[in-house]
Image (cartoon, rainbow, N blue to C red; front, side, top):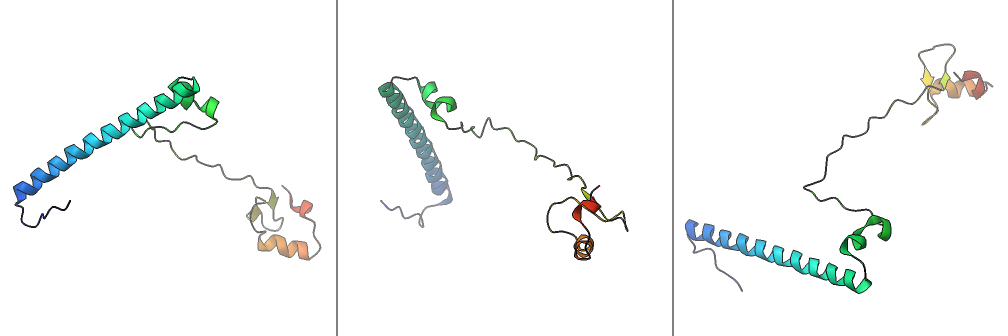
Length: 120
Protein backbone atom coordinates (compact mmCIF):
# COMPACT_ATOMS: atom_id res chain seq x y z
CA UNK A 1 0.00 0.00 0.00
CA UNK A 2 1.49 3.30 -1.08
CA UNK A 3 0.04 6.70 -0.36
CA UNK A 4 1.03 9.61 -2.56
CA UNK A 5 1.60 12.35 -0.03
CA UNK A 6 2.91 14.89 -2.54
CA UNK A 7 -0.58 16.18 -3.32
CA UNK A 8 -1.75 16.45 0.31
CA UNK A 9 -2.16 19.81 2.02
CA UNK A 10 -0.50 20.68 5.31
CA UNK A 11 -3.73 20.02 7.20
CA UNK A 12 -4.19 16.67 5.48
CA UNK A 13 -0.57 15.69 6.23
CA UNK A 14 -1.00 16.61 9.91
CA UNK A 15 -4.20 14.56 10.05
CA UNK A 16 -2.42 11.62 8.42
CA UNK A 17 0.44 11.89 10.92
CA UNK A 18 -1.97 11.89 13.87
CA UNK A 19 -3.79 8.86 12.49
CA UNK A 20 -0.49 7.05 11.95
CA UNK A 21 0.67 7.87 15.50
CA UNK A 22 -2.59 6.55 16.97
CA UNK A 23 -2.35 3.38 14.88
CA UNK A 24 1.29 2.90 15.88
CA UNK A 25 0.47 3.26 19.58
CA UNK A 26 -2.43 0.80 19.22
CA UNK A 27 -0.17 -1.77 17.53
CA UNK A 28 2.47 -1.33 20.23
CA UNK A 29 -0.11 -1.93 22.97
CA UNK A 30 -1.33 -5.03 21.13
CA UNK A 31 2.25 -6.33 20.78
CA UNK A 32 2.85 -5.85 24.52
CA UNK A 33 -0.45 -7.54 25.33
CA UNK A 34 0.45 -10.50 23.10
CA UNK A 35 3.92 -10.74 24.67
CA UNK A 36 2.39 -10.73 28.16
CA UNK A 37 -0.02 -13.48 27.16
CA UNK A 38 2.86 -15.51 25.73
CA UNK A 39 4.89 -15.08 28.95
CA UNK A 40 1.88 -16.11 31.04
CA UNK A 41 1.39 -19.20 28.85
CA UNK A 42 5.05 -20.19 29.19
CA UNK A 43 4.92 -19.71 32.97
CA UNK A 44 1.74 -21.78 33.18
CA UNK A 45 3.27 -24.55 31.04
CA UNK A 46 6.27 -24.63 33.40
CA UNK A 47 4.04 -24.57 36.47
CA UNK A 48 5.54 -21.37 37.88
CA UNK A 49 4.31 -17.83 38.33
CA UNK A 50 5.36 -15.06 35.97
CA UNK A 51 7.33 -13.47 38.82
CA UNK A 52 9.23 -16.73 39.39
CA UNK A 53 9.85 -17.04 35.67
CA UNK A 54 11.40 -13.58 35.54
CA UNK A 55 13.19 -13.80 38.89
CA UNK A 56 16.96 -13.48 38.49
CA UNK A 57 17.63 -16.02 41.25
CA UNK A 58 15.87 -18.80 39.39
CA UNK A 59 16.93 -17.88 35.87
CA UNK A 60 20.49 -16.84 36.60
CA UNK A 61 19.93 -13.62 34.66
CA UNK A 62 19.86 -10.13 36.01
CA UNK A 63 16.68 -8.14 35.77
CA UNK A 64 16.68 -5.30 33.29
CA UNK A 65 15.46 -2.05 34.74
CA UNK A 66 12.86 -0.16 32.80
CA UNK A 67 13.79 3.27 31.52
CA UNK A 68 11.18 4.98 33.66
CA UNK A 69 12.47 3.48 36.89
CA UNK A 70 16.16 3.40 36.06
CA UNK A 71 18.15 5.67 38.33
CA UNK A 72 21.19 7.44 37.08
CA UNK A 73 24.25 6.71 39.12
CA UNK A 74 27.30 8.83 39.41
CA UNK A 75 30.48 7.49 37.95
CA UNK A 76 32.74 6.08 40.62
CA UNK A 77 35.63 8.33 41.47
CA UNK A 78 38.83 6.37 41.75
CA UNK A 79 41.37 7.25 44.35
CA UNK A 80 44.88 7.75 43.02
CA UNK A 81 47.10 4.72 43.39
CA UNK A 82 49.50 4.75 46.31
CA UNK A 83 53.09 5.60 45.61
CA UNK A 84 55.31 2.52 45.88
CA UNK A 85 58.64 3.81 44.59
CA UNK A 86 60.46 7.13 44.99
CA UNK A 87 63.67 8.49 43.47
CA UNK A 88 66.08 9.18 46.37
CA UNK A 89 67.86 11.85 44.30
CA UNK A 90 64.62 13.73 43.57
CA UNK A 91 61.70 13.00 45.90
CA UNK A 92 59.21 14.54 43.48
CA UNK A 93 59.78 11.61 41.09
CA UNK A 94 57.57 8.73 42.12
CA UNK A 95 55.99 5.63 40.61
CA UNK A 96 52.94 3.64 41.69
CA UNK A 97 54.15 0.41 40.15
CA UNK A 98 51.53 0.63 37.41
CA UNK A 99 52.24 1.18 33.76
CA UNK A 100 55.67 1.61 32.23
CA UNK A 101 58.60 2.18 34.53
CA UNK A 102 59.72 5.80 34.59
CA UNK A 103 63.01 6.74 32.96
CA UNK A 104 64.72 7.54 36.27
CA UNK A 105 63.93 4.06 37.60
CA UNK A 106 64.94 2.26 34.40
CA UNK A 107 68.27 4.09 34.37
CA UNK A 108 68.86 3.30 38.04
CA UNK A 109 68.12 -0.40 37.50
CA UNK A 110 70.43 -0.50 34.45
CA UNK A 111 73.23 0.87 36.63
CA UNK A 112 72.83 -2.12 38.94
CA UNK A 113 70.29 -0.83 41.44
CA UNK A 114 67.59 -3.09 42.86
CA UNK A 115 63.89 -2.29 42.71
CA UNK A 116 63.62 -2.85 46.47
CA UNK A 117 66.07 0.03 47.05
CA UNK A 118 63.47 2.50 45.74
CA UNK A 119 60.43 1.26 47.67
CA UNK A 120 58.67 3.82 49.85
